[in-house]
Length: 194
Image (cartoon, rainbow, N blue to C red; front, side, top):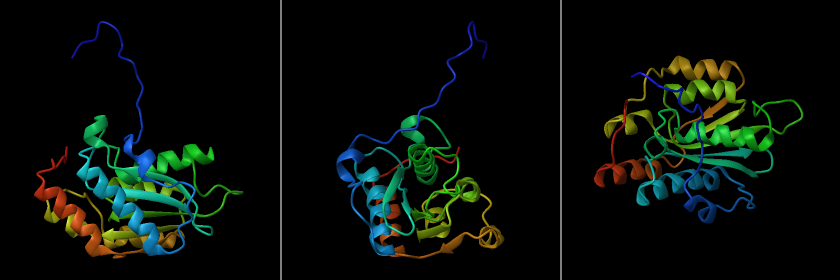
């Protein structure tokens, strides 16, 4: 493709408008189940409202349970292959705390809750995001079962994170996370592997 003028070079990261009314940013989320239910509810709403894929994520302050940011899969909606739920949540959290890392000295520890095991891109970003803990609902195999290609993620990938101080917990409310994936497939949602 030849350009008469260079194109505008910008990208937008935004949440669907329904998120504003669906999420209480002032609430404190005390337990892992409460935090995970929010991530799963975001994924489910994204499917039901047809604003993206079946994935949701949320970043919290680890000690207080304060919600810092949320993310929903926005790949198709915003025409950007990098806008997976985890990536959106990381970007908006870093913007909110005004730091490129959620692990910056002087800031509280942060954790990510995600409705489905991260793909290779999101898992890589987890290391650089600065979160100290990742909690996962549905598994990689659950996403693969409905046609998503999660890329090269290995047991060693999680070992690498753990070796660098990131605590990882799998399978929290897995059946609820898997149900969102199944609903997405049943509704004929697009599988966008690139």
